[in-house]
Image 1: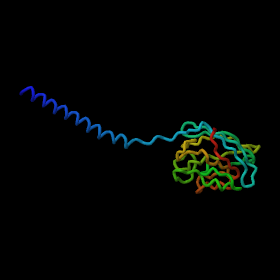
Image 2: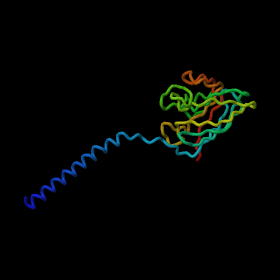
Image 3: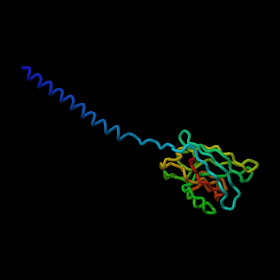
Image 4: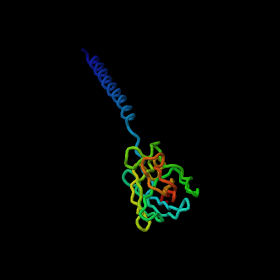
Length: 195
């Protein structure tokens, strides 16, 4: 075997090895791309406030503060003008519009995934579903709620910025469709991110 033949064989072997590597890389590249899940939407606002004003002829009002935290948004604040010791539903609604006297302009519950209504923390519920609040003897409810699975700002499908928070006259039964048989809307406020 001459030196020329050896170089020729080495060149062919090297080409085969390179071709095998590039074929493997090409085959593995699309597989890793197609199985990657989209990144979860994160909040872009550092905080937001909700000034709840009376609706449906009630005297219910209050102020809520919201902050992104862990897998959602944490809500604190107070709601006053409620009946002493009474339980009330509270939800995020889809439209940031409290202009109607009965707050019907806020639309239905915020529900970007099209789920049935249910209790927060269970497998099936609206993104805007929250546990009931309970007023003390003075008719004031202290709010300390973690709303999981939503973001604050950024415009993602689960973004609650600019939407409305509604307090209802009755408690949410967590089962009746589409809104838990929670009764009239007695307060409404828009989720307003901090500038």
